[in-house]
Image (cartoon, rainbow, N blue to C red; front, side, top):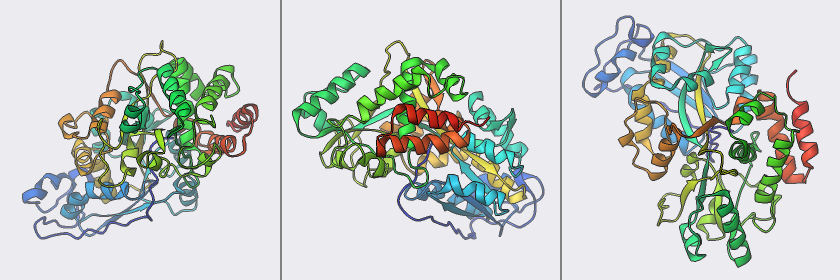
Length: 451
């Protein structure tokens, strides 16, 4: 799944007061049209969005604290200077609650949607509003493929906000060093390292968790996607997304067998937590904790997982934890990189909503978000790469923009919502929790595919 960054604190609401240093008057419309009092000082850069002081917009997403705290910081100056209050709500049940709210006439002004499949579902309701001209113009700062992910049937609806690198392995430098293991460069090296650690009898090679509220199961879809992409390359991956290659196809069942030999190997998992079944009941947020406790060596998770490490954790090659690029299962697949992202969809075209939409699609906002904290990357080409000071962000940005990479977006996010954020989550969870057969799992997922 994409950026399903469900963190552990309850939803927060941002209420920022207009200050005297950033004067503004009500009236006008989004994108800088209409009249508005001049903004001065540090607020002058927000002049194109002025004219809506005293208004409020609502935003709903799956991002919880502490990451949502950084999200809110990223637009704090905008809100202070323009007087537009952004009321943010995050939920672990976002994917199930958004359709209920939209069809029930209680849609938020904005939703940050991490799955293009869910975006398509929302567009079918007729409630998603096409973006204003300013947002459309800002898309020139993104490579064309990102615009297609925010489009449905060729019509652009939702501007991308973030990009994240899925193909990472977080690890303990100390555990690997003490075991005489160098950072694996190939899949064979990774499996050999896992076997060596398991036989040593200390920390188990792997830890993992796929719990995530109503989105439980999404980390398991990432593991499968990494193996499919790294085994067969982009063409088969694309056919799988389109269901031209079914889950019951030999290629996919073979990929599941590879995954079972990795993350369902009782000798290799679930370090510091429990047995294989415990992966299904462990939240993804808690899954990496045993690394810091010296009970687990590695965790496969995306770049955004950096926000989960406790304050004071040293993220470096000689630190408490670091990360490396997950190698291809098949060495013939060049540099496989799976990524995800989030897209801002609007359910209202009020002027203040359009002003916020324009700002959040801009390079200025993306740069502001990069500055708030590490662990967040944008594929917006207007962002100065020097702003990335964190080594994981630097690694992610380089891989996501590498022209030689076999890059693909998260498959389950691209699949129809009934499958990618529905039956696949459910079935892969049952696979880990109940030991359901691969044949049963794949048949159930195929049967859920919309006709």
